[in-house]
Structure formats: structure tokens, C-alpha cells
Length: 236
Image 1: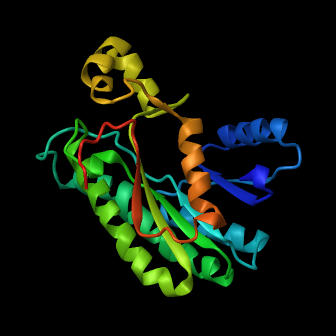
Image 2: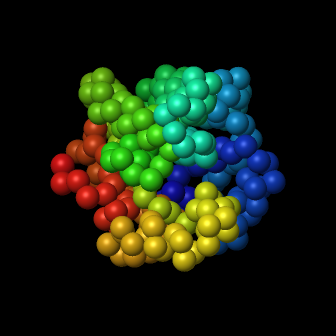
């Protein structure tokens, strides 16, 4: 995005990581117009705080929202109790809905090529080896995307879902799982189901987000793009 001369607000929970990310980006793109805002977007008060900061910095509106909210780090089983189910749905579903609701007025202020990109997961499309509560929450999120797209079509706002498979990056969940289980077990039980027999990487994922946001992609909305090296077996 910064290479395309966009103004970018990067939001994250850890200020140190955010500052390092900005440094890395500016080391390759010295003129990058990017700010880091710290906030835990799982919390409503932080969503309000971040929205207020962006309004102050860019009152004329924004063109795009990209959400990466969600976490599959939870217990397996359907009998884990209401507290776990509610927590997982709050992190993976309701927090995203509230984020969209809060930022929509700012998005509607800008009338050109607007989009909302929502990160779901392949666990919401098929019954895979993921925690059941997480899978159900992502299924709900994947269903929300086309309904939201229909409701925002008259405002010329496109809505696209992106469902990644097993994406490996430093500090990510798959790095944790490889350390816990060992790469041999991951290869035998997970990656053998992927046609390319490997993890995806952040660069491959980033390209799909960038092309989804692009004004040249102006006729795509309400869909869910799967990026998983063909782990999901469904046809439709």
C-alpha cells in the first residue's frame, strides 16, 4: 500500500512491534506515509479510541478498512462451556461487526473506490482440525460478508472476505505450533492435506489483499477468497 502512495494507519496491540514494523517499512520506502496506532481492537473502548485518533488525523474520511481480527488459540471440544464460546465469538465475530459499524461513517465520507476487507479462515468453510468454537465463529463471519456487501452496494463500498489457510510468519500461531509439535508432526497431519505440501507466507497473502483493494478490482464484492494451497476440498 505504501508503494502505491497510500496513507496507511497500522493498528496493533504492541507499540514496540508497531514501531519496529514502521522502521522496517520505511527502510525500504523512506517516503512511506504510514502511522502506527496502538490499541487492542478486541476491546470496544480501544476501537473507540483508535477511531477518534484516525478522525483527528484524517477527518475527510478513509477509503479502505482491512481487518485481521481473530484468534484460534482456544480449547478443542463443543463442551468447553458458554464462557469459552462467548469469548471466541467476541474475538472472531462480534468485534469485527462493531469495528465495521464504528468505522462506516468515516468510510462513507470518502466516495471513491471504497472497500472493506475482512479476514476469515478456511476453518469456517469446512470441518478441519481447528477448535470447534473458532470454526463456528469464522463460519458466522464468512456468512456476514456477503450480507454486508449487499447492504453497502448502494454506497459503492465493496466487501471482500479472505480466508487464509496455513500461513507461516515470524511470531505467528504456526510458529508456535511448530515449536510445540515439531515440523514432522505438522507435515504428517496438516501439510500433507495441502496440494503444495507447504505453508503459505506473508508475501503471498499480502498480494491478495493488495489486489482486492485495487480500484481495478471494482466489480468484485460479497465473495470469499480462499488462499490455502488447496487444502480445502470443496468445489462450491
